[in-house]
Image 1 (cartoon, helix red, strand yellow):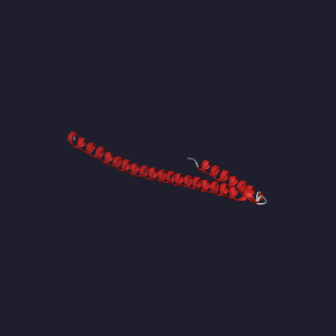
Image 2: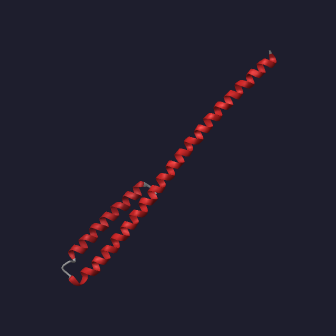
Image 3: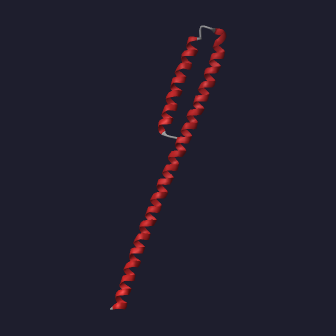
Length: 103
């Protein structure tokens, strides 16, 4: 999930919350519907909170995964560098042995 998707989700949630609040406030004059509207608003807010929590969790997992991947890449690069240095030493040793045999 991209961060832009997360931001869009948050923006949609904010707009939905504003519309819900407007609906609840405009319907306060109607006492019969007030409880129903409030219950719907609370359910929607809970749903939005759940969505935000889910997005936050997914984003956190993605960041953690990318950090783990980056750390593993650095680890492997260090191993490759160490092996390259070992190969260079062995090549030098072989070259020295060949010179001794020829010389």
